[in-house]
Image (cartoon, rainbow, N blue to C red; front, side, top):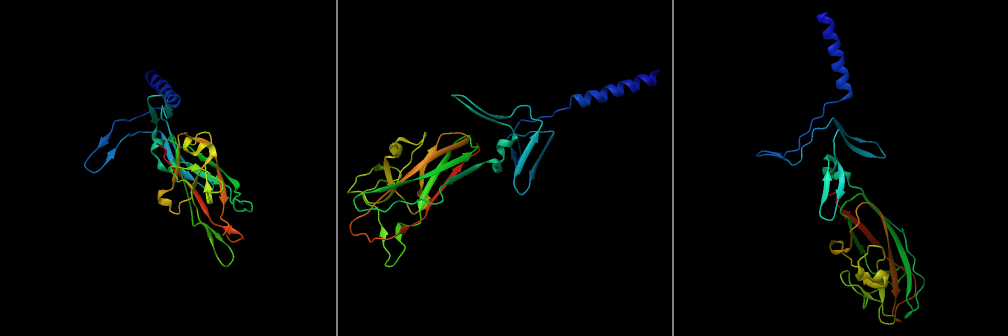
Length: 239
């Protein structure tokens, strides 16, 4: 009789363990002379997985995780927020932009449409620069220099008959007011080191913006085809 009771007890205990897995957690900072663990967590499972087309970092068993916020705080809960490789950030723009033929004193325009996709909770920063001024593709070479155009920090309105060169602007739902919804222009810088033109306050998801281009020349400009390369890139953070 006693042995039968023990068998029943062991069977019930096994079922209980299967239905209610034991969870362990550790959320107190741990440190020593040689290391510091800011937010330790003991999960039931977790591993980096990858193939040719994807990379996945997972952790199983956390009781509370994810991003939440209010007017006064931001909370990044869970182990995965500390994985820098988890940041998703990309920008896609038109591969080329063709500006119609310009008659001096009559500027022409064209748009470059861009989309930024990110999971960053703190928005992103947009940069742009050009490799050189628009340059004539045939001999003799000649460039189209900018004159009376604004700067990245202080774009200005286009003055027809006075402003020459290649200028750009920005337009979008969260673009700073200094760009006047695509009406204020700046010349392109040729160094990526100081090329910050826009910081988006949006967190996560997909956003779009338009970069209007405008071009005018002086009467001394040689006719022909001119070209250059313009670059855009974005930076962001998962935190």
